[in-house]
Image (cartoon, rainbow, N blue to C red; front, side, top):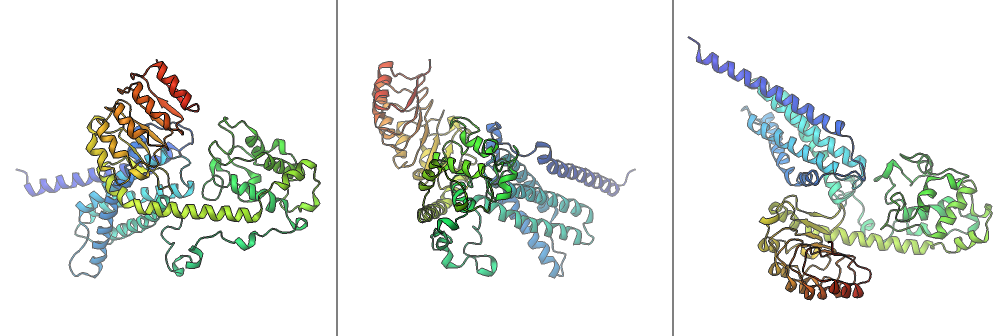
Length: 513
């Protein structure tokens, strides 16, 4: 007859072995995940499902943070307690499981955000999250095999997880709120800036005074101001599109993924000149459409500098100048104007940060009700976007009403396929920044267009599959900024479309078949 105690011990041993093997396999899978998938690539199509689950990362990451910090507290308290105080196996299991889920969702978010963040920072944050998950799994496995023995193997792994978690969380905060968010108001000994440096105005404005022409360096005083305004935004230490930095001369020469950036002495062979000279509609044109473009006289100066050696030390007085170059030089923006524009941009950034901070709390509360559907438009933006694509028919007027605290900051709203109707649209009367609105296959009618007609910032409107008629279409003539209007499978006539087209000549009205 078998001994029950012996059988129980045997079962426990088998369970420990299974959990250990499962944990090690999971650890290996999480570690290999970004290696096998590779980094995100700009322009590569990423499924909406990946983007949806990726955006759940900020929602769920607080669970492992709370559990692991609590485990660290218990283990730290155990050092000074006479009792055998420490984190239980259940706590470590849920801490590890939630950390793995958060890491996977973070990986999906990374895959769908090519070019949105500083590459090195987002990769460090990703690997930090993976390290936390791996250390949490290790702590759980050690707990299984050291129960009743020395607590230090578990304790050290928990402390390591909490330590990495602290640094990774800081990186996450930087990605969300921008560089220096944590230390902005910290004491100087913690890396904070002096209060005088935070009062606004361009840094080093006094140094922006123009030097006499004979002392000016062509690269530093003519070319760098152009690149700083038009190129540094995407090619700097924090954001290196195409692995190309332009904020230092040596890096400008060495280039990025596509080879050399410039060829001193030959502007025609220089990649930056080739990209600038492409048609604006070409995908390879730089700066990309929508960004501040290199002006004709600025391109003249860049080519002139390159063709005459493209060196970083040549003085303006030592270079031959054609009438075309003289004219281009006369069109340069003065240092005083550059300083003023920089101050204006810094003020706008400060205003944006203040607006983002003011709405962050409201957004976080609403994200609990609409996980993955509501977010900021971009990393440092205070504008909000919402998509009901994951809810569709379960989303109705009362749900739209819940979004009222963030409607004034909303720039994109997708209500396609929902139960929202004219009554619900009344809640959008405060939408003063809305640029894109999708109402396809909803219950809106001509009456709802009274609200839509007041959205003078609207650039894209989708009314596909609605009950809109000519009367409702006629109300949209006041939307002067509208660029795209979709009216497939509605009750509008060709005559009404033609009449609206006369009022909105710059709008593309897509009626379909």
